[in-house]
Length: 95
Image 1 (cartoon, rainbow, N blue to C red):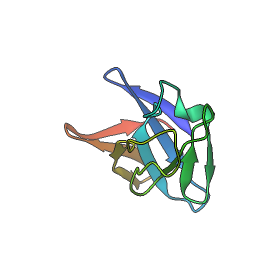
Image 2: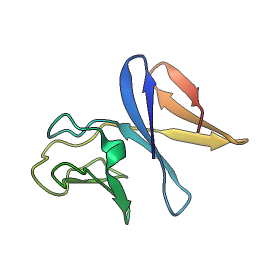
Image 3: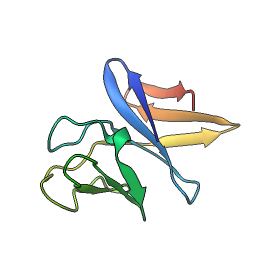
């Protein structure tokens, strides 16, 4: 996992054990805590502060205390480059 900042927004870039790329907001929806300090297990991201889990496919909060979902961003990986697809269009990120 790697935190990147784009236009002042923390975005968490994730390359999971299945080789899939994911990107989500970088801060837990429960309390301001950086999600790159958490851990991945079976398609979920766990916040290290209060152990709230989030589904990487949907952003859904699976365990309290978090109730709100994570914002997710589409990711394109091609020719060795990773792109986040934001409303402004694809933005390259360095791994």
